[in-house]
Length: 152
Image (cartoon, rainbow, N blue to C red; front, side, top):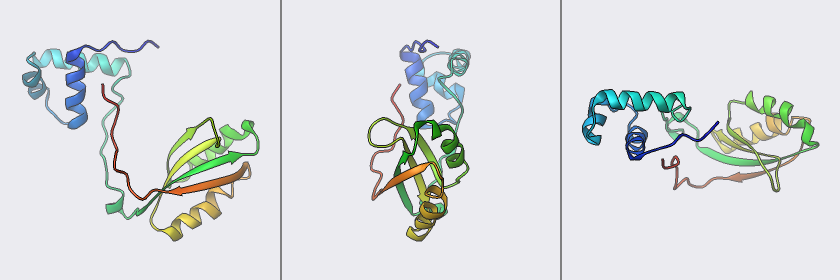
């Protein structure tokens, strides 16, 4: 699929929506100096092109009781184990992101846990219990000072 061709209007619309996805079309139109109909057409084109894939509610993990964020590098016994291992990791609610990578690890996952004890349980009884996993390395995040989406 070809990359969507952006102009300045598309970029302005996306920046506004990324800042507040609930901004009314009329307000976007006023900010951009175009009609609400134009905003609607542009947003629909970006949806159809797969640029806009939905809207999300962001939650504060700490306020939900998840105090520990960590990243786990996973080495597999064999590369062919990747699809099945990914299926098993997908079933773990503590795994919030997963990446198939080059370098030192086959898979790199982000895990959210309620405490160090919870993390230890996830590691021992869930992640390391997957037979195809040869070894893991855990990195605990102390802060997340940069958390943003790409700029259109």
